[in-house]
Structure formats: structure tokens, C-alpha cells
Image (cartoon, rainbow, N blue to C red; front, side):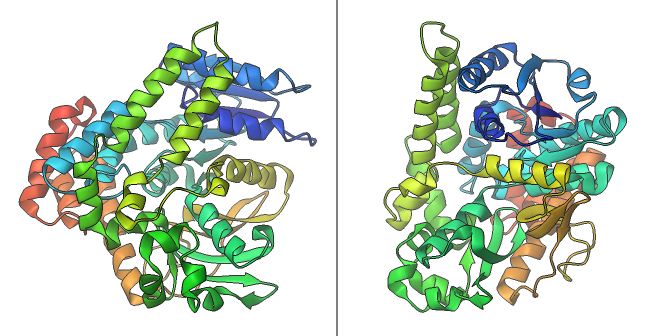
Length: 445
């Protein structure tokens, strides 16, 4: 089976390849094709993968190419993890937003919109090529903003594109662990959009144990989300929000922390990964050791500004191991071998949430089999969550419309309608600022 990884020179690719090395069953991935526009990045990551494979018998064969069509032909699965504009683009997204006093995080608020505007046209081109060159392939999308990009690609690939994210998985694992349960045996009632969802229940042996957690301030304060949001706020909500909702519920504090930070997250990762690629190309160093050291630092500093604002302290060791690669492998296994499983995924709504139309991509538990991912019916969202979901989905639709039409006016509308952008005039200045620093937004007229 052939897996093509778009963004194959990306830092997280070794996580995916490492997961593939653990799969020894019949029908496993035997060929991995890395695609990237940067030869030097491909070389560095290929060195890491070669070291990973050196102690494994019959490891999947790895090739690398800068030719997208060549990479796609004959693919059974396409894993998309591209970053249009690179980490310099992310740093610019943050800088332009903070100059206007609004959030520039890569998937939330102004930064997420800017990232979406320059990513959607590229993602659509990829989807059209997949439909033409590998019509039987399944696309697994991890490109951010994951829900928005998955919806853009679904207009050309239908249900053969599925978005994944490790945030809901990590959240469910932490809640189950606090409750003394095996996460693999828990049913997680999670619903929303990517980076905008809530756990409303966690069933163990048919019993919902979330009320027990919500009734115990000590338990609530013992894990990441409890420390971020505070026990009293979680009890008020009657649910456990995805960590990214910290940017909404504590927006002023988050913006202030970003403004006061020595470097934004994008600038930190830009500089960190520049060092990684430089060192990983050196033949006198172990590329795998360099990658391991860099990854440990990256994971330990994840959402550090938010945790500092909330006084949440350091991340737990159990939360430093990643997770999206395990979701990707489980998803591929379920489809390729009909190994039925349940995963929280980004898929078309298909009537699951009545407040959104059929084609809206949402993030919910899905039953996965050889025919793809099928969203599970969920209870309606409470009013406060419904308002946020509908508002952000409306913004995503304006981003898609702007990317399709090239309308600058529609782009301004997308920014202005976002709950975290508080002025139409700010929205206009954001579009001016982003088009000035991103050549890829030159299509907006």
C-alpha cells in the first residue's frame, strides 16, 4: 500500500513514519513518498526516517520528490500536512494581528483566517489533482486550519477526505485518566468544529462519569484543561472545552500574553526548526537525535503563554508524546482492512448537527470502516456553544467564498464577522496588513 505525505519535509513526518514502523500486519503501508517544495527539507527528514528504519526489518520504502503529480499517482492514501508560507508566514500572521490588538494564533481568530485565505487555494488544487490522478485514494488532512481546509477539499473529493486532529484525543485521554479509566474503553461525547469543541460526556461501561468529574473541584484542577479554564468555569459550562477555547473564554489575557512574550509561537518555531534542519543535514550528527531533542522542546512549550496566564504550570509528561499520528494510522487501518473503530474526526455534517447544513465539516465521533468515516448522532449543543459554532462556521464560509472569488470585500467580511475581531475598521486594516506581507494573498482584489 502506498502512502503519499504532502509536506513530506515537515518536522512532524517522523511521527507518522514511526507509527507505520509498528504496523506489521498484512495490508500495511509498504511505500512512503515524501513530497515537498524544498529539497533540503526533504533531505533532512529522509535522514531521520532512515535512522528510524535502520533497526526495523522490512520497513516501508521511502522516496522523495518535489513533483506533486508524481507523488500522487498510484497513492492509496494521501496525508496532507502542508504549511503555505512556512513558519515565517505564521510569524507574520501573529505580528500583523497583534499590531491591531487582536489574536494571531494560527487556527483561531485573525491569524487563522489569514492562514486559511492563503492555504485554501493550494488545498483545492491538491484536491483537484487527487481526483484526477488518484481517484480511489483517501485523503487524510492535518493541514491547518484543519476543519476549514477539509471542507474546502471535500467540495472536490466528497467524503474521501477526512480531517484529523490530536486535540480531542488528548482531551479524552486526560479526562479518562483522571477518572481512573482506560481511555480505550471510554466513549467520548465530543462535538463542535476543529479547535472549537466540547466534551459533554464520557461513558465507561455505559455510565456517564463526567458528572462525577464536574462535581469534584480537586479532580477538575488536576489536569491540563482544569488548570487552564479553572474548576468553577468548567462547572458553569457543564462540559470540558477543547484547550483552544481558552483563546475565546480568556481572550484579553491571551492577547496580552502574546504581546508581552519575547517571541510569538510562530517566531519561536521558525527559529527552532531552522536550527533543526541545519543540524539534521550534518553528516557528523545523528539526525534522529537532533529531531528527538527538538520535538521534546516543541512539545514542552506548547501553549506555554496560555498556561502561564492561567498559572497552569508545566505540561504533564503523558501529554508530551503527540497523538495525531496514532489517529492517522488507526484511520488508515480501519479503511484499508475494514478494522472497524471509533475516532473523533473532521467530516461532513450529514445532518448530525441540526444547526448546520449537510456539507459543513464538523468534529465529532465517527464510526470508521472500509467505506470511510460515518458521524455518530449527537445531542444538540447548548445555546452558548451553538452561538460560537454557528458564528465561526459563518466566518469559514466567508473565507471559502473569498478564496474562490478573489474578493477583497469578502475577505474583509470574514475578518469582521469573527467573534475575536471587534471592529470592521480593524478587519480592513488586517486585510491590508496581511496582503502586504503575504505574496500568496495577491489574488484578493
